[in-house]
Length: 199
Image 1 (spheres, rainbow, N blue to C red):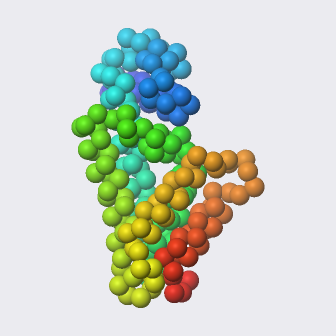
Image 2: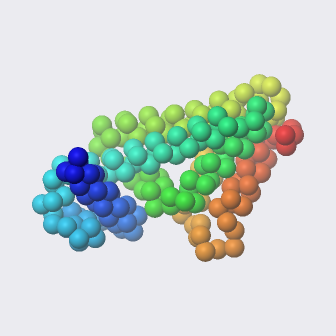
């Protein structure tokens, strides 16, 4: 039990160091020595937990996408029944994630090109699940007349990209709270799909 806890703690420290470095200078700009220095461990101790820098990147990206997918699914499960309420809940959860986990979100957006074939397949699969969650709600809204957009696929991708871009510029110390930003982006998203009512 003690050793397992120690190993998990060690991995958490290394992941935090990797997030800090990857977000600051990129995956290719970060060496294992950089990770060791930030985590205050030896390079050899990193290899006790991870076989490569690539494995670390994959874990960060998979865990990040899994968390946001869980959060958006939970938001959808607790949303009201109308397409407007369901899309609003999804967008708010999406924005809150990207204002709260900016470094991980930036890595997810910029480092997919750095993944090997196996990692890219897993990450793209998770991204597709996320897009599908939004697309199904928007397509349902179009089918029922709640949304008037003639371009549901493009609207889906635009809403996702609009929300994810927040991670690159949002500042917690700024004048708008994450919750306020989530509401603003909800309204923008509903405008994008041409919602016919706000309820």
